[in-house]
Length: 267
Ligand code: KIV
Image (tube, rainbow, N blue to C red; front, side, top):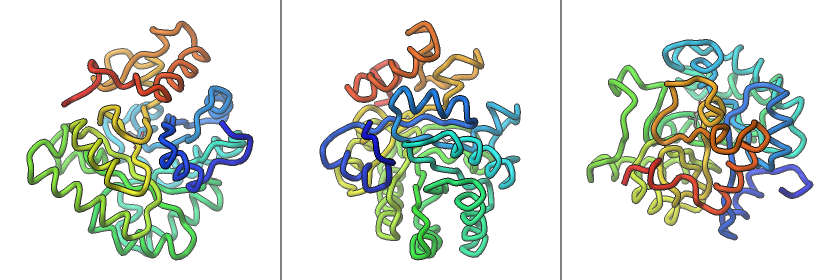
């Protein structure tokens, strides 16, 4: 990891050079320090904290104040990594609400980028945010905040129509000014094709190893919540022995593109 602060420009350069981007979720200062020492470029303060920290059934109950609190905890400890904060459920239901939420997440929380779930319907909001200096990460495929509409946590984009919708949404987000995209639970071939077509870096989770980088939920990859981890995740603590070794092993496997392997991939 370079000594200087990682920005969206660094990530774009890494994509151009074919260097894989290593990202994990992070919710507190202690882990932010450990993740940075392991060489992660991106720390995502995910609203998955609703499930792994708060014990909620989904991310829907997570409030802006929770996200600001945990983002500030991470930002205080992060010296080089890019800190991205999730915009919680309905906090970007209008462009005005999104601007207010971004003000909190970047101002009080110290995030350098915000992430929101959805596609073309958010293009105007993404344009407004980026015009006012807010870097945006999109999130397509499985959208956890829409679990009640989707009827469960299922792979997306498995038929031609679904894949075409995700592609159109990705292009709309990129055109609107998004600088990063998370693709969750889509077939590996679709994710690889999108990463090749898009200029912005694509970070996969449950999307095969053809993306520009990978992200996992920290508590899943450390095996902290037995029985909860999705099939696309891997227990790196069990594989490597302790937390520091697990984080280093994850970074190494992402960089050499051996994670995710066949066992964690839906083709
Ligand atoms: O909230 C989160 O942890 C996320 C990841 C699953 C990408 O959005």
